[in-house]
Image (cartoon, rainbow, N blue to C red; front, side, top):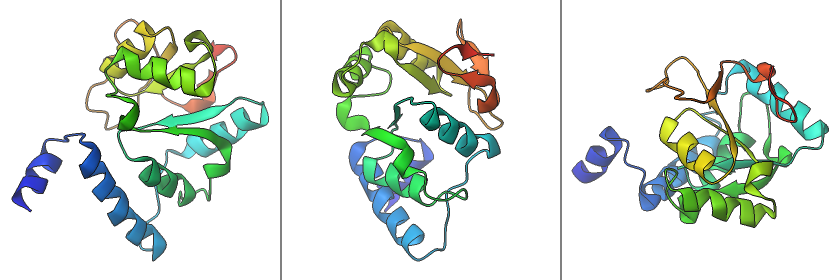
Length: 166
């Protein structure tokens, strides 16, 4: 247990730790004791993008089962039907260019057809280096709000993926 707490305190993104997290979440979501909080604009934007025919995917350090739990049990209802692809650290670390190339291949698109949104500059740099368009999601509580040379948004209603930030 002390080792687990040490990993959690340091926000270490190990796949086995994220698997354990997913199992714990499954219990909480399953018994209704927790729901996933999302910023107010997120569900509306996801629904709009899906209606517009955009293919939506999730790439998170959380395991795919944990991602599905989160979006299935959001305070805005089940959002899982909006997503076509789910990726976790099994495709590679989020700061590695090769991870984003693997994702584009799995989605059967060219990297430049993908808009990647993140709150982490290292992830944006890796996705950009893989050829993807990127935008920093600048939200209260972000650990590092540095967007580097990249566009930043603070509300998903500002983002029109076919055209970029408005």
